[in-house]
Image 1 (tube, rainbow, N blue to C red):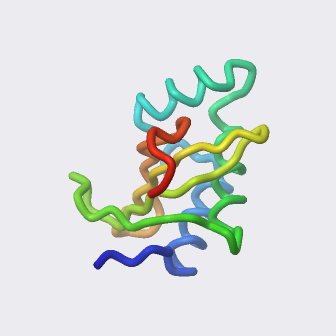
Image 2 (spheres, rainbow, N blue to C red):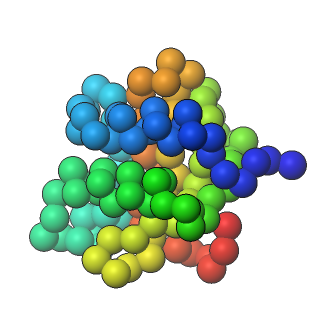
Length: 113
């Protein structure tokens, strides 16, 4: 059974990537960028990063490991908030621990993980 919560090491590495806002360390899939911009047209993609980081640091984090992604690395899906809206995110931490892929940043399509 997949683990339901990311390790502190995973959270720390992902948050470090997000903190840098470095496009060489943060790969945002087109769908995630388009979904984010559709929900929040008056914000920038960089506004997504602190929202995700805050959720990952929360003791109330709802998450689940995802083991069927094409890219190597450790992937978790989780819920997060921005402007009082519940959102769904999915991030892969690449094996080098220095690059993340943001697959999802949209309204939840289902109520639970």
